[in-house]
Length: 459
Image 1 (cartoon, helix red, strand yellow):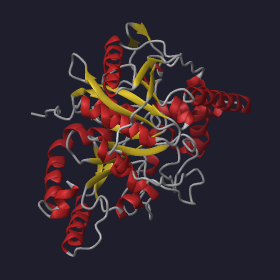
Image 2: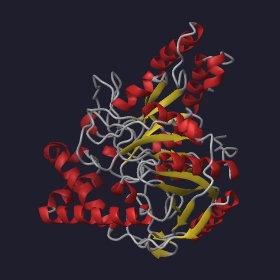
Image 3: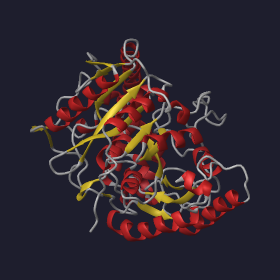
Image 4: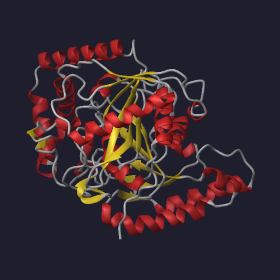
């Protein structure tokens, strides 16, 4: 698409109009976009075409229609964070990541739906309602970047910016059957932000249909900014250039439970085992990894809910009746923790990091399921059973949040289909700071097991 715009075989304005028309047709069905910005998109598309005509330096993503999750601050465009408190909030500046995408020439289509403050892994809120799964309108799209994932797989824009504090890119990418990348923590700066809840957990990243598109977005957004003390320097080699080569030697470990996940649906396990063996065709070493993570959710859950309690306590008295019931429960739980509870959770987080650090001394990549189940019923926060046994509310999403605790780059890539025709996702985890290898392994798998020929139907 970028090449076609550059050569003016297609204009950005033509592409944008086609996508806007499709959004107007499909979005009322799935509810992926909460705040469209069509007039702004038309202006940006016109500007992108003028850049080409004037033979000016063409930005990396010039003229490419893109959506932004409604947790990101966007100048002059309503940003609700999925919550009634901010229902009419219109920021006066862009976040760094949004500004970098604009500088790269994107056409801004609008904001995509999210649960309030990203507090749950399904997409629903009291302002805009539920985002439906395009493959089955009775299933959830996942969350919290559910609107972003549903929009991409439905053809409502080729690029989407999401965020991931515990799986919020990888879970909806898995449920919706697209590629989602959570880069290393700090690779894409977060500033300004509105909370401390996700301060050391949240990663911004792309949701796309092709691995190369994720590399393009990462090239546009990666790099340090003094405003974000956690931000990382931009790598010397671009991610797009990195995809021109395939590693000659890799040692890949896979785990179906990470040493603590109690149940995974058998069809998920089979799909992962079938998929991981495909890497042997590249002469890469593949073996089952003996990895044991302990008390992962105790650590993650305590720190995150304590953060929600701290951030939202000032609003609780006035807004309690206008907040999601589950969010109120999390706020109250967070306020109940003692200093000892929080420090215990932080201590356990360090132990989880040590486990992953030791693992990557011997391996280049870790493969797991993205989730323990495929997309479940709309309106539920979690499946009551996994593989026929009663499951805790968080068990289904246990594969993702450990790598928010450690900051490792991790992606979800489609690797199969259920008997109901729902996507299955495989998680590809890399060493800290090594998005390059994650992208290369993802691209290699995409080439040997493509999925993009399948598309949801809305007839």
